[in-house]
Length: 207
Image 1: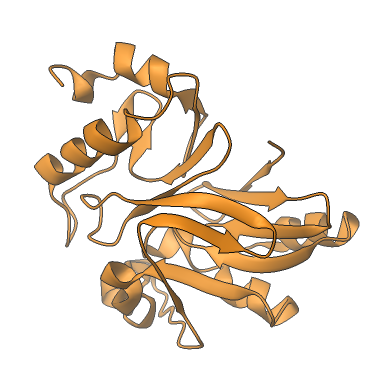
Image 2 (image 1 turned 60 degrees about the vertical axis):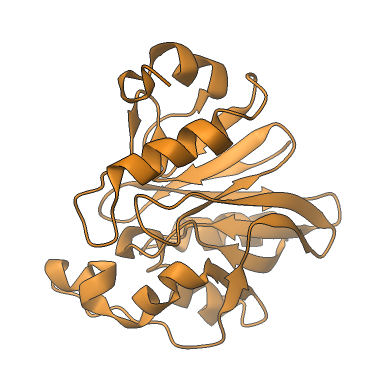
């Protein structure tokens, strides 16, 4: 499948733009300073249908206002477990960086299962542990996994809502159950595969 990774924000977040043949697109985890994302969308004459948020930490949500400011028809989706973080700078972490980011416009809930947005169809997996509302999005052979799992690592669990045992359990039961050739596109750093993480991720040994 086709997708574009653009690194955004002060913590180098991977923001993904997923287009289709009809000229629509989805945006995953826009961080602040999303000018390059908007420029890519305009250059390719794409129509953003939705913004999909893997979780509610500031470095994955602060670009929402920029995107919606340009494309006010784009729907915003986040799991109910993290919805409250969008309106709370202390919970989403922006307050610790001298920001007071909030977003209070219409927010749509994510739930585990097959999801359709326009002509897009993909699967939502609820993977709490990094946050309680963490989710990953599984398309044809590609999983956009936020901060749930990275190449050779997993998401931190020392922040409010974190639970290491829960996170490892979700990774093992849901992400590692995907076909081994599935590409994992994390929220930071380079991509990897299910097969590679099964073989070499030190946090998953013994599972």
